[in-house]
Amino acid sequence: MGAAVRAFHWQNTPIGPVEGWPQCLKTAVAILLRSPVAMVLLWGEDGVMIYNDAYRVFAASRHPAALGMKVREAWPEVADFNDNVMTTCLGGGTLSYKDQELVLYRRGNPERVWMDLDYSPVLDEAGEPAGVIALVVETTQRVLADQRVQTERERLLQLFDQAPGFMAMLAGRDHIFQMANPTYMQLVGHRAILGKAVRDALPEIAGQGFFELLDRVFETGEVFTGNALKVALQRNPDGPVEERHVDFVYQPIRDGTGEVTGIFVEG
Image (cartoon, helix red, strand yellow):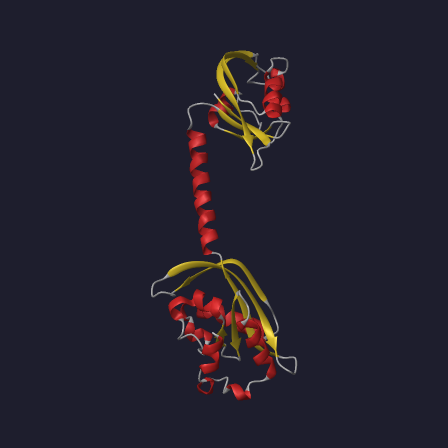
């Protein structure tokens, strides 16, 4: 892009020939051309575009036509967005966007993209805003990956809720209920257990060995499987203690380092 900027006929733009450029413009161009991050300079009230190699990749088929164009004409599909950028920054303000979604025509077709965008005014020798410099970091792939993860999480949560067996997720050494599916809630009498430690949520099972089993699984990281074990539950605070027999598994949950962080209960 350094070669492209040197060879461009700037005399045909509002900027004028390079020989007449003010030092502030030359300095801004020198900075952006050397940056590995996508940067574009929008000079003057029209926002005439000068950009670097990383931005050229971002612009795709809009390059090389976008070089020397007014930003509104170079990206007509986001003209209003860029109008606000120019008005704000030429007024001395700055703008910053995180994962900003826009629809761009970079390859002839509408394309949803996400970007981190930072805009700042470039001051002339008198200290007045003369242009706008923009840093552009495309985050599309990460955003789409996050969306896929969220979709998968929602699917797993749906399966969790619809499972015919009872399931619960316990976190930490106190075995705090993070999640419990409807079947588990039915088993314990639809109590408000989420966010509570198991000893507080189900106090009537003290002395039945279940708390100790949970502690052992958390400390050792070894799975425990119980078959037809009897549990006495007071499913209604004003009702009697009821006996149930359950088949269940306490499965340790590990983090990326292999440390046990919780227990998955299924039965």
